[in-house]
Length: 506
Image (cartoon, rainbow, N blue to C red; front, side):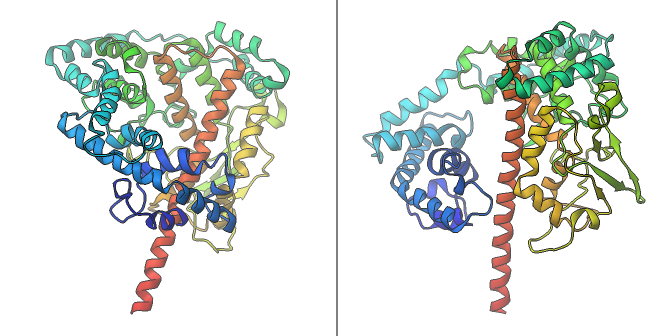
């Protein structure tokens, strides 16, 4: 609400604004947060609910950047005009041009439509010609060619049929993964962890754990971990289109979607292999354990899964489902891990299948209620919350769980969830669902990052690097939830204000 109100007081920023006058989502994501507000440097501007001082600081930073933002909007308008003249259709203009326009506004000021047209054209050519033929249009043309599609379909069939079938993660490997997580979380101070990582890579534990996911339809299957919508992973389809807002789950993505995300994420496409080579490499990758080729990245995926199943933002709970029969899921059995009772963690049952691409997480057990409710979440939902300290006993689990449980939106969810709706909907219900099944968003985001590293031939060879990756994914999920909560609360507040105005008018 504060950001929206401040933004509406600016003039000349219509190109960066939505139909209702507020800032576009990409304006906030690409311009305001990283370049103007800078919440990391100004923590009082970072929360979903701002204090009076935080609101004042946020407003002052926006107003201080008003001239640059007006110039940014003018540059964006000019670049779009030149883009149409050059018949460029590749990519989303907001994603591609917002930050370049801010740079031009900072260095060159407000543009002159005639004098600065050449500057705009040079910027566009610099942005688009780095692709060197690695474009989504070239990808589409390659995969929709009838003969190429027939050959590639045969490659997928052969690669899937030749998948390795032998393997399995033994008890000693489970204990070794826990040792690795312990070592990684403390490696910056102790310098340990390298022997554990090297042993797991040499034993090909990542490969064996990935093979398990192909055939395990029981607890901790790829479906329950949120990696596929099917009971068991299926061979990838070739595909011919993709949308960043509607991508499949990691193991369900088509070859087109996988290569599409690589192209979209690459800042230097000319350094990538040609499109045909990208496609054949992706076919081999998608039919490999964890849909990854590098063994160190497969070990990272196995370690991430061992970490993910122990994530519990609400604390371990006993969850009642169906006809009221409660059930407690204990993952990573303490006896197998050799850690005694400290190694147990209870987790809600995850048997419900995903329904749609838009919301593949299991049906939310908790819905965040309106502010001001006094009912306790766990009592209202018929659950008995375990102590927050009941968690899997590695340093990695403790570090991430403790950080997550301190989040204000998590505390609010635990206090203010008052019922379990039969047909939950809305952003708050989606956030609650992800908090009840945190391993799913965590593993999805981890796989995306590992996939990107695999394409770039960037292995994880040191425990500090592995911990930066695992911890960074957790921070990313937490920040994503913060943003969703902030947007949901803002939308809720706007709706309440409209209702209040209509009531007064009537």
